[in-house]
Image 1 (cartoon, rainbow, N blue to C red):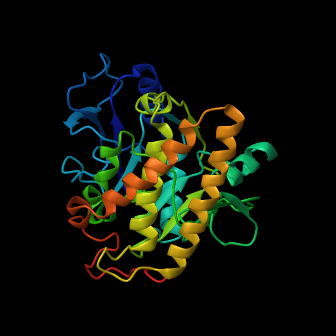
Image 2 (spheres, rainbow, N blue to C red):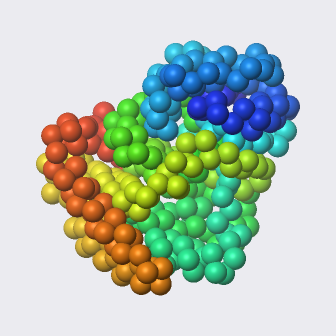
Image 3 (cartoon, rainbow, N blue to C red):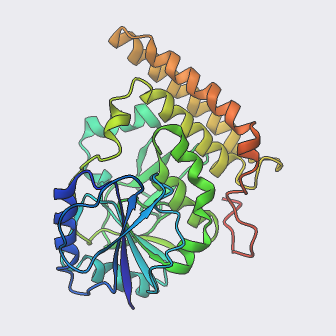
Amino acid sequence: MKYSVAIRTLGTSPETLRLELVSIYSQTIQPEDVIIYIAEGYNRPNFQVGNEKYVWVKKGMVAQRALKYDEISSEYILTLDDDVELSPDFAQILLSEIKAHSAGIVGADIFKNHNLTLPQKLKAIFSNLVFPHHFSKYAFKIYKNGSFSYICNPQNRYYPTQSCGGPAILWEKRILTNLNLTDECWLDNLGFAYGEDQIISYKAYRNGYNLGICFNAKIKNLDAKSDSNKYHNSPDKFLIRTKAMFIGWWRSNYKPNGNNSSGDKTALFTGILKFIWLFWGISITSIIKFDSNFVSSYLKGIIEGLQFIKSKEFNSIPPYIIKNGLNHNSNI
């Protein structure tokens, strides 16, 4: 089982990238190639750790993942962000689990939701209806309203999942290139690709592929925030977040077969309830902070989301569930 590494970067946090490369070249199973896909217009860092190669591509969190990967001939590709540090046995663990469970995609539990404090868990419930679960067989489960739940107390080293964290995922190359990820580049046009990891990995699940999460693969998030600082400091943060959530829910949950389909009535009902819930949460936050911009940004995000899903641009995007003979999970 041979693999290569594909890193997306802007190259603006060279020290974290250097630490990541050192950890890659310390793997017990070495990659065949390490390709760094750097955004056009950005300069590569002025160091060379090993035999890594740089390829300039169109800028965008999705665009820098939605590639043909012609430079890579390995059967598996470990896609990474540019700010993670891997334990020496990280690739070995993911490769062994992908083989043991006949999975096509395996991720690592990088965000450790189950270790959140009680106040943090309550905040996740209040702000986005993200709950812990006890009885699901999945590490992460996506609901029809677009929210997810996470396993509360993982006891095993591996669980099936419906979504993976974007910073580190091992893919079978044919799956990564068959998912038509360029169809999700609409996220890059929002100002920040909020929720892109769920949109991308859940697409694999909805199209019938077997996903898993390794809880024993150690990875450290160096959190360089190369592309997200502008978003977090933007006055349009809540607008972008709401618009991305709305369009993502519409595309992946309500009408995954395209706008010409009848749509999932349960997804529509639960989605409306969710956005009403979030409206009241935003309103309370606005009152507490004496800032009406929270509510106006939220409403504007919904309005712009509705405008986009009615546009020619959106209707020209092929359906989320791909009509090419895959074993779809279209009725979940």
